[in-house]
Image (tube, rainbow, N blue to C red):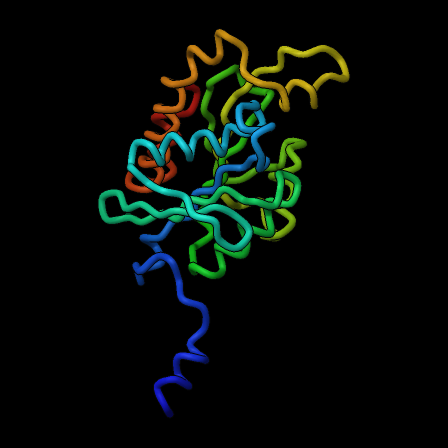
Length: 209
């Protein structure tokens, strides 16, 4: 078979060069694209990945269904994804990159905001419901399972009746902005721990902090 023919039918090239699937991770930060959403509570997934990008000197590039970058930590490589599908359709991007990079379900970590947790609190779970979060709801629908790791970052619930949407799409207040840098640093440490120490150890160390 001619070499050009083999290349034609070899399928799309993967981003992660690692061949051992258990050393490959997909870390997804949920959010909405566009400047108007950049500093909102709902975009904490994007903000955490942006913080990781600064710490690891990474550059996100536009790709299919989102902005991506990769980084390697202690022999493990993660593809970091900020979906460009808007929050409610995040699952399409998650499924595409999971399948393209052949990443095991147990090595997926989806980062999202959670109004049921106090501001800055971290809670990582191996499975569970979407908790009424539309981004997680779509991820669950597209993956056809609830058994993927989700990283919930507390944004609090300081809003009146019927004001939830305005609250999560609102920007951080002064006190939150002051505390956010330390909380983001804790969040990126949890991502590295998830990759190297594993989910159980990471949950023991970071949940509730």
